[in-house]
Length: 524
Image (tube, rainbow, N blue to C red; front, top):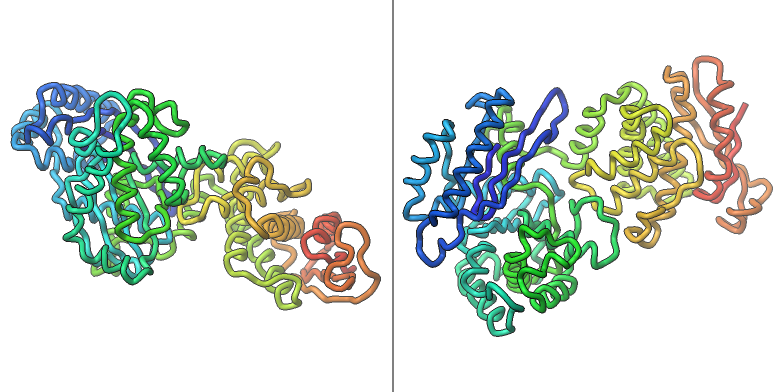
């Protein structure tokens, strides 16, 4: 897929197989084809030269990779769409690129942004903000379906050129003028203002390179681990502080702010001001970033749009979180029978212990446990030795769209501790809030127990059964919890010799006591 944006040109290669998909290559170039467009209405000679040179690189890559025309989507957006000489440029480019370039309408551009956001987050009711170099799209979402949408020439390149100085810090008067302009443009989006009046706007999800840069900068400023910005929420106060910091610097020094890339340093302040205004107009508390963009929206249409039963519906994953986990598991070719049985055992134990009152039975926690079970062995694709650590790395760095950063951290750390050691948040601790360390303990020990019972990978242990015994009170880490009640017995239900699973499960008493404040014994 090729995205000819107002600020950057990007070629992205996706691959898909049975039950999996992934991005395998990407070429990015800050072309700035929209540079000067706001003042002249035309694409400039220098920007077009940069664009043609980049298209030559793309064409060579496609030929070398053996990609046929039917496998390539080349799409042009705001700058080429709006320029007086846009068609002439495309005719010239077509002769050199030798593949058709489709100019997206404003509505189509908004639709692909919507597909990207809803297929990479759990957004059900709220808004999607797609901020590019030339334009900004807003889509109102209800029950995961697009209701209203609009597109405005409020992109970062346009706003920077029109309102902000090329050199030197930005003045308050200049920034206020930009904000007032955005407010005036968005006055027609009454559906945005009416949501704010109701004080319940739902979530705002943002896509685009500027959004990702702002999220990375807010992440660094908060001292959070930087394992990508998927699901990162930029709170209003954090954005206000970031705007003040960026505005105080000359454009060529804004890349000194951690998280801001040099290629976007001169336009990122304008983008931040646009986002700031949307937050105010819509009454949003913050903006949730997704790493998906227009390119993923186009890809998802190809991946999901061919289902006959979905012909009347937009191409959406039925469950984004489940699709993310199963995709990552399939990409690393896990032992499906093993991981599914580990998952079944762990979830059964989770449910049984909830019935016995040893934890609250939170369905979200149950889902995190399931995800950790399905992914705990993906590190085997690297090597058996330390595969639990490899699994953690892959989970954190591959990302799990639909999960919040702290949820990904719990899943990754549960996988990390599925073999040995006492679970801890480690460098991910800044993400953890109240109760998250306890959630990690419960997920880790249940995954570890299930792995112990399935150690021989033959599904010998069919199920389990817990019984409470109010015997001797706990001593040590779990003492004093649950009114001093003591032991819980684990019975293994199987059709064969239980020496190995009984031995393996019996080693988990210390972690079980820490997680559930009960002494574990394995029945013989």
